Image (cartoon, rainbow, N blue to C red; front, side, top):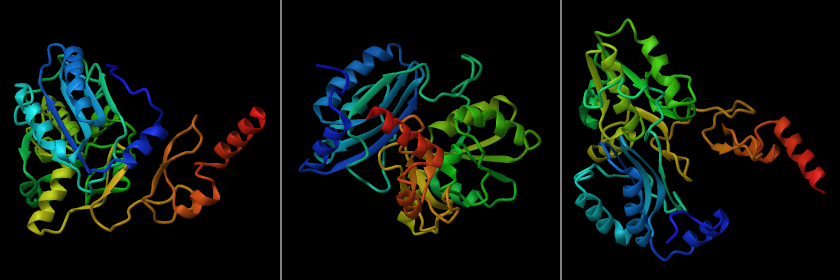
Length: 317
């Protein structure tokens, strides 16, 4: 058995489109010491590949971070097998808000130095010293308290299409950048209630450890992230304080939470939250581009990229 995909993306898409069953998009993470992440990767791959599970999974000595597309009829088997491993027993498994079978087309499992790139030195923080976890409803109610400061621990390209109202949204491209930037912004607010949130919880859990290490006493994190919040708020019939779209790291790009359109087309500056990658492979920058500009610019992010494409095409001839 090969522990990697050997079929091109176009064929994979056709294969998934032809499947006669539904898929469920799931995600989970856990910070837990994994003695041999390579061995565990191989064991999980063997079983998940047999269930036709697709997704992107990172393993490291510090834990696991997984986003997956699982055939609906195998979801129970998948979770039961996961929970049999003492490392992952009862780990919260979240289901996507807008389920779509086109979230992943292959199974990719990588062993990395960390499951979230944070730029922090090893042993410079205690992963057990996390902030207080708040369920969705408690978090929802606490947001408006005078002592609360709400912080988005995601990147700018995520928050610009959707975020909690009145949240601090760092202008950063990576989680690694956000930690020192937010720390500096909040350095005189260590007596406040710092309310952290992210997509599924993994980044704000690491961030809560970081801020507590730097002297913040009252640090809270949204348990289950935006994904769990959206489900719970909808279940109990409350008005969501998260507006717009929730960016996700798979083929879907985002999940609609509310009708609000927060972004602006990078080209014409009109309201839009349609995110695409520049059509020039060497650029591939993620941008917001409305359908009108995408048509006019052939899905390139700029005239420079369009001209570069034309130049390459001419040279190839």
